[in-house]
Image (cartoon, rainbow, N blue to C red; front, side, top):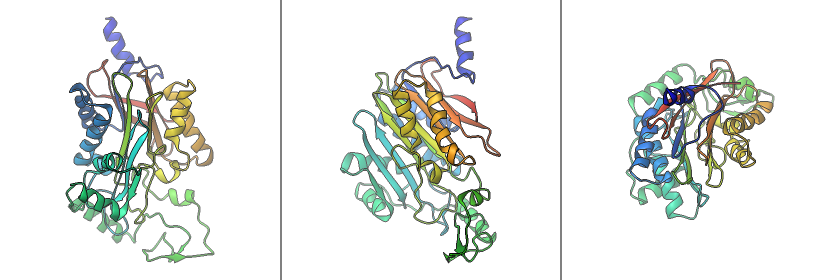
Length: 340
């Protein structure tokens, strides 16, 4: 009965979580990604390897249409990818943004970290780097992404991310030019967008001995302006890892969230002794103060194996789901947290 009681506690929404290592935690109910990372750890892989395996699984499975190829076409109908990976032992980061023609974005990000002294490569040059590193160039377009794009064009390019332009982006497609007399705010534009059009897989892995790694992968915001880069490939915004403290990863409206580096802030709050779920909530509260309407969530974990999550409550989003695997469950477990 004692062991059953522990299992029920692990399923509760209570901020208390019994600590246990190793640990895999990722955004959204992407179970196969959690399982892939956990399986890698059980085979003796490093935390960094596990993050790569987990995010790679989502890329191949096209999780929720928001990760990997064939999703979130931009204004030109093209799918591009953003990803980053961070080693909390060395504080090294590898990232790619606006990556074209390469399906395996998280592995290209790792190649940036391991085969250059840079942190971030972007655009066409990132794709050429990937090909030189042996990655296969492929068309990221699918029938699904073509259908999404065609439907959007048929709706006069609605919704979109333009503001203060001519012709009026609320009723017309481009090309656009500046409209000096227009004064439309981010919030006014945001109300016309699907809040789920920019999800991400963010993953934190903490090894048996406290080694921390984190990573993200996404195809960005649906109907984004070509060249747009969100929070996912930005260290401290999309995710952050420090093996002396823990890790954090974000998902949601990256254009807003990246202005506040919530993953970095959450790790620093945990460094000061704050419990993970409170650190997540505090980091999001700073964003909420300026943008109460933003869509976003954060997962946090410390090197003791304690973890938590938080999300900002907006219309259509009152609860956030995430996945956890640790020795107490030995398999992926779906967790949920009510937004505040």
